[in-house]
Image (cartoon, rainbow, N blue to C red; front, side):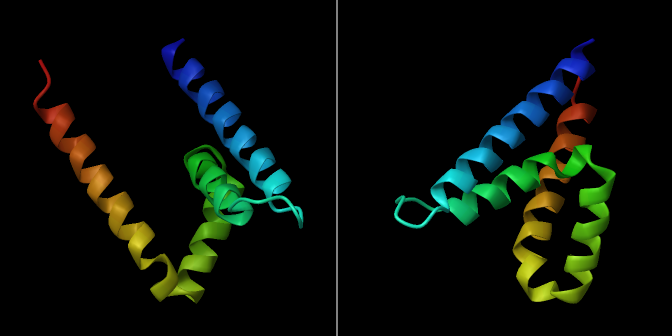
Length: 88
């Protein structure tokens, strides 16, 4: 049940960020709209197979652009592994 709630929360947060980003992307509305849309997509990335496939294609095509993202994801993955090993 907890896993289901995490998924629902992640979907809700990602969709809210995407909608907010689209509203902020309208000309005349101040704010970093496209950046917020990208954050919403990255939040949704672990949940969507289609998005993971598109991310892999873009990552291969533009490796310099996605290098910082991959570095962050690698560090987060290592931190999660370390925290689960120290558990009870």
